[in-house]
Image (tube, rainbow, N blue to C red; front, side, top):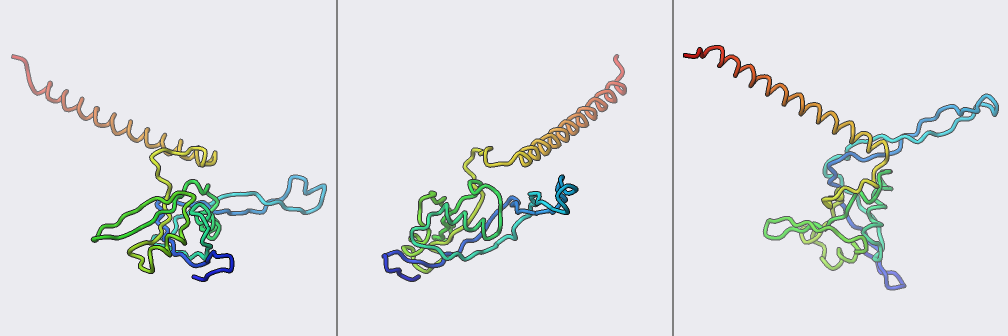
Length: 188
């Protein structure tokens, strides 16, 4: 860390990315413009997305200021990996180890990670940072794009259809066994 003339300081923090879900990055495809015949061979960029999983245990070092907030760290990490997902989908966590137990605490948007790092000292067991999905228990549907929401609906529909298929199969087997049992037992 280095001290600036204004009393602030700069330094590096190390953030481990522990993302379970895929992230979206831009995939630009060049296509001819609709008016290419009138204005010559122009092309225009069509914004597309592609999703992939970041490798487990990915670590990124960030050079930040002492007054940099947790929300700004999340934004910087997403920019470094060119992730186009809404930053509100992610949260920065403080990770600490004590007596062979690991504790995670979600940082508030206004907390300053470099100050926390300085106060904790150099040991990563005392304090390290982890970027994870923002799991508040509530789903923030506004953070998703329309194609993502349509994809959720398709997945839920497939799951529902599979569940119904399994139930029908199970009850058909039960009906068959009952009919067999009735056929083998003659009244009397």
